[in-house]
Length: 328
Image 1 (cartoon, rainbow, N blue to C red):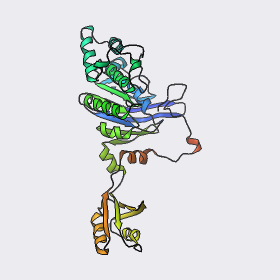
Image 2 (cartoon, rainbow, N blue to C red):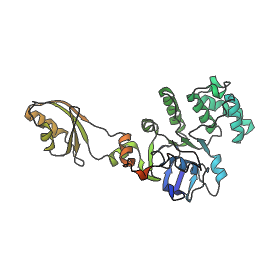
Image 3 (spheres, rainbow, N blue to C red):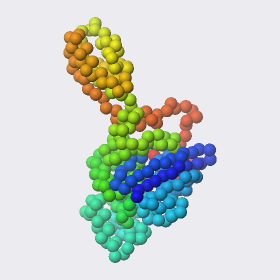
Image 4 (cartoon, helix red, strand yellow):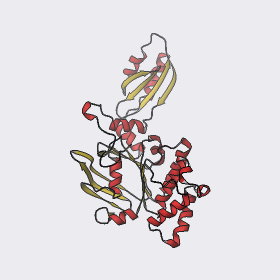
């Protein structure tokens, strides 16, 4: 049944860490939850896991309300916080057995569940090693395994690839994608490329409010305007290439960068054919005519970047430092 958040708000003093946030997720969906430092990501996740009470609004997970049935909500969530809470002096298998006991996995099923999660997370060869002896990547795998032991329908992951090397990131990404086929997975990350490659849908939050929601391609089209072209020509030195491009039908603006021209189209127009004809008519050699795709990073910056002023100075956390740890 997934997650439904309805008008979630969290206020600390005169600061709204989360401001009227609403969204829905369905089973089998991997949602990337993005936002700059202090945007409200971690606070929202902590509300959903019943770690924090919202000031207003509510949410349901797998059909259970966070106010009316918090214990049932917790039973149905696998939660991996940013700083994975591991007992580093314990062997992997002992830690997973302790976690299974704390999560009320039936004794008769415990050994099978532990073996299954070690297989899913690739921990079999490391089962008898102390957690502190493992690499950061394998420690993240242990964290994922404990979050999955009780077979929760909802998985919430806060910065799951923090501190991992590129190979480990790929491994964890593939694992999350596989898990996401059967469960509802919500993850936050600052690695935008990883979110783009892992998630079915992206939710962007800024200053406590949802500013975008949709698939990556939908967000590109919605927020980044019309076509952009990179054009490179071999023209005589006295040719006014810049001025010629500016007069073309369908071209809104022209910017020269490193010997190339970046053309932005007006609305839904496609000026590529006009560029080609112009170069042919004037005898210029067209050496490049390439569409420029907007990246998720472009969309993210466009939606969340604001000029910094002295009054904007604040800590990087969602919540006051004395209340909880900050969001990185």
